[in-house]
Length: 421
Ligand code: UTP
Ligand code: MG
Image 1 (cartoon, rainbow, N blue to C red):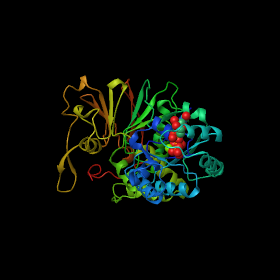
Image 2 (image 1 turned 90 degrees about the vertical axis):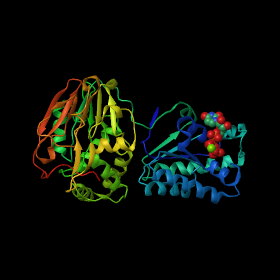
Image 3 (image 1 turned 120 degrees about the horizontal axis):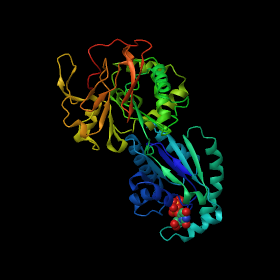
Image 4 (image 1 turned 120 degrees about the vertical axis):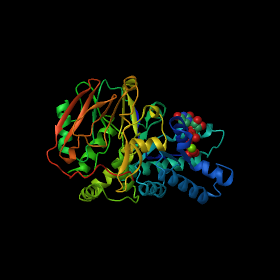
């Protein structure tokens, strides 16, 4: 059995003392991802076993978790979380940070929990406490099963504790081939037609195992940005597609997190479309976008290094690296200043690429093209669909172009794409 967790989420452990929560968490997560109430006790009063400063220890526990979630870090809350109030507090922290909550409950029979507790050298709580905890767990399991605030609930038996594997990042995509898809900008009908033309079935599965790769800018200006986001998010969450965020996606993520962003360049329309959704669906979509799309890397190197994908492109010396500078480059391209009207002054990094044939094919988008051309083993796949152009995909390794025309010009093209903000 494999437990799949969103790349950013709060994992709340729940179980009696001695049931093996900390042991399990240490096995599957980085030390920095674990926040335990015991460690907080130790930090406050030098002893993990001391109950003398519980309020202070839990104040630290909650503050530590809140800060990690604000920074969008996967966090495992290691406490017993047996009482409804304790879980409510953790769930509220996650909701405030718009991070999904997954509960992992440890259903260990009483005699086994007592045995495990008695074997502990560092801190044993005793039979009475374990028995009380075990009784509370029964009630907690009933409540958890009905708790609609959770993205998932996993109840582990002692055997499963030993055997489950954990996945927190999208699976390594060992696809035989890829279909790299240009800027969609809310053009859901064209996206569906393109996938059909590429040979994907109604469940977006390809008979030969090909995988779609989106170059970013899923939303803004087009007729159904929420529909495109829902669709791509589901594929990415199921490891059926890859996605690199573009500048429009990044701005959308910041808006959904409650950040201050200008509703320009089509984000106003996306917001309007989102507000037109039933509240529950919108909330679900927001959480899923932030959990699955927002954490995706800004560039991908695929097919054993023969294919690279980044929204506005990438230079060979940046491949496999990460920095704020590279992130900016992949979002906006090689921008070296601004014209008096605010439009970016771009360098043509693709035209300047040297020895392109010895490097990967670099697929990107960002700036609409009237016609798709290969330049030094790079290709811009933005067919300006939302402006009445076409939606393009490149089959890799075949290097065949597949396009569908826009059903409408959904927006008027003025001057260029969004300035770097
Ligand atoms: P833990 O110390 O991991 O339990 O394991 P816990 O649930 O986190 O307990 P509290 O809430 O912090 O008090 C308890 C003992 O059980 C053993 C561990 O080695 C440890 O001594 N254990 C754990 C097993 O024997 N098998 C397991 O699968 C897990
Ligand atoms: Mg523990």
